[in-house]
Image 1 (tube, rainbow, N blue to C red):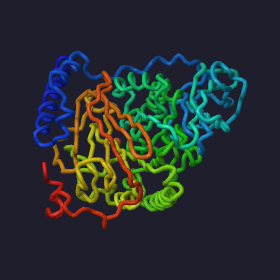
Image 2 (image 1 turned 30 degrees about the vertical axis):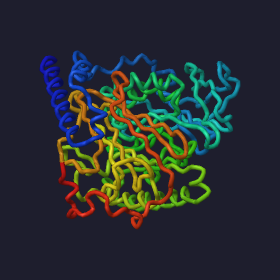
Image 3 (image 1 turned 90 degrees about the vertical axis):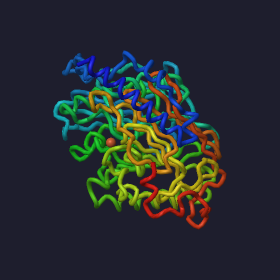
Length: 491
Ligand SMILES: [Fe+2]
């Protein structure tokens, strides 16, 4: 079976290489990002997928409230940090902290909840503590305590003050407990480096958080602990979180400006970071509860209008949104993004265009794709200088758990002219790094988890931040004269 799997992987790698090479003949930008087939084969050879190892032995003594699954997230304002963890039995919720290093002179208590819904076999007691009045940009040491059980010590950095700094974020979706192992290795190094500020995990966790009665979720949360204790782990909800009314997502994470556990009608939020207004939205409202579509839409509209108030857009010119399911993709499956009548695109594209969203980060497709500025299927210029429409980037290759770890969605479907670069790399997982350089420049790159090699990068330069306007279109843009929907069929 192992030999068969390895053979299959090599075949798929070679197939991908041919696909990438074929793309090079039609897409100039691909030429600078060509992935050599020998390189792919060399780094893939002998590695193979990570096949379902058993859950780690549970060495927790169930009668003790030993904290595990510790993770942090930004609070409602920049001077807050949320700390969460789990215990197997009821216990107190306390964080000891102080200015680093090794200073735990302050303490603050919080709340806990009993989490049983869809979680019969996971740890039932989830704790949440809010740290307030943190000094901007300072490193803090902290430990969590439940009754007499104290965790190891960790360090986080409070968000820096104001707008004049340049955050770096790790960005990915679709990371499984097992399939995510290669990405996790490098992500842990990145988090430990002290050179990145936060994570954006754009939906689909663990595969799935509720699996095995919640044990898979517990294991996943422990696997990301070394990342999520160091930098805030900011999330969006995906389709793999739907079960049990999204209970695992709503309980296990606490996000800014939303109660905890997150209510079903508030699984979206925004926060400010340097020169960016970030928004996390739910694509799942379009597939689960029609009543929530308008609730979220109105919230998004209000939030975006506030972000576009002149004084706010001046301070934070970049608006970056992230939600799980893409509006466009060239994958060979029947997902929403492959259809001419995409629910997500119909629901949100016009809003994001008219409100001047600069960048839309998506996942769900287990591959990587970067789009040109696009609106209603029309490419509005094939460069990234002063784009006239939002730019979509789909980074869902962190490592799902499907197909025995050879986790990829083939990209052999119709490819619109909006597709600037695409890569589907069996077993070669990866994630994005987003660098907010200043008010006019951001830099994005997608890296391979195995060695950190950059497979794609782009500078986005915008000197005219603000709502996009259909009246401003250059009517010589490509595709504009083509028949309706013809964009979809080009390849
Ligand atoms: Fe998904």
